[in-house]
Amino acid sequence: MVAIQNSTITVNNYIGGKWVPSSNNETYKRENPANIEETIVLAPNSTEEDANRAVEAAHEAFQSWSKVPAIIRGKYLYQFAEVLEANKSEVAELLTIEQGKPLAESLGEINKTIGEVRYAAGEASRLSGETLPSERENVDIRTIRVPKGVILAISPWNFPLVTPLRKIAPALAAGNTVVFKPASITAAMGAKIVELFEKAGLPEGVLNLVIGSGRSVGNQLVNHSKVRGITFTGSTGVGSSIYEQAAKRLVQVQLEMGGKNAAIVFDYPDIEGAVNQIVPAAFANAGQRCTSISRVIVSEADASRVVEALKKKTEEYVIGDGIEGNITMGPLVSKDQLETTQSYVEIGLEEGAELITGGKAVTLEKQGYYYEPTVFSGVKPNHRIAKEEIFGPVLVVLSASSFEEALEMCNDNEYGLAASCFTQNKAYQTAFVNGAQAGMLHLNNGTISESHAPFGGLKHSAVGPYSIGSTAKDFFTELKVIYDAN
Image (tube, rainbow, N blue to C red; front, side, top):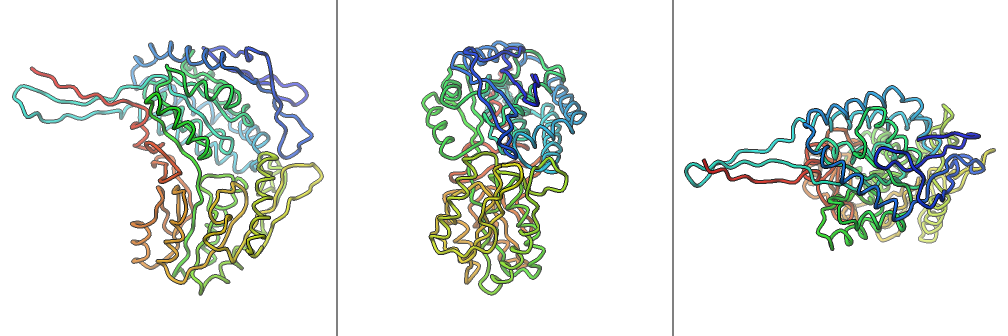
């Protein structure tokens, strides 16, 4: 997978069990987001021809892989988890250098990945159907689950290890083969995943890697007739386009998209405790998480206390190159993300919000995409910074006169991924659980997901079965009903 020259990593596609350059031999460069003068990766700028070859290789491998006993398929995933654990330090370093998050967060992502892969491996032995009574004598009815075929897995750059494995592991456990298209700016981690599967002994063609743009590679893969399922994580705009294209072929999709997640703080005496949960949920990975808390909705009576506690906690962050041990916030992933964050801060100021802390790019000895964690108060529900996904380290505070109004504000958004509520009032807890329009709800804790629980959302945040957990099989398998007359 990897050739290293002068600290630059060169990666290739992986098709039919072989590492190969793109058919046009074109490459692109990826800079270190913590030191933009340094080129860290050279990756292929692949073509439609490369995409077609990857699908054909996966389709051919499906004929044999789908017949491998499920328990054996699970063993390959257990072996992958062992290989990943054995190479944890090397993988964490690559993740931090390429994506920018602090080393501690990279290690956390690896540990989460190992947990999810082991869960998916166990699910291979639980792909059960059911037996049903018949209306007729001498007829038995049962259901079975079978693999779909070739699965296209398109993953984002913010969690370039755990998100792809959230797709690849259950797909393989169910007997599918995979064509994997990682985000271009984290292509090296995509290649590292495949390299680890190669070390785990996965048969040729079962997992294929194509690196390139959505325009030249992604659309060709989405529209390929032999792709029978598409699992995507990324922006709502791109997800909507994939949904439209797949619908024309009547192909099932699993889309995990944007979020503008709220935390309600109402009738909760431990303000500091709530803030200690909210701030990490807001600023982990420099706010570049679909489950980041980006809105805090607080009672008018507690607004000033909450804002002061948020300011104090936020200003504890140490910004710098994530490879250094004392850093708690690394750079944004790219110039585009930095500029987007800057533009939204300017929008917030123009809208009349009060800047409490942050709000500036950070200049260090090594030039990178650094930005201060930022908090606004006095934000109104109709402000763009309260409505639109920023995907950067910006947290906004709104106040409400009643819990009912707070819940209305929480729901007044096109997204519905996650939401938190900090309250000791049982009536408020019940109202939140029943009324919050989000797929993952958290009472008195931040928006942390776990490796065995379904992950997904409502409204413009998701389409299709939830990933991870018991619901993953609903996307990665087809259901057959058998009527057996004795």
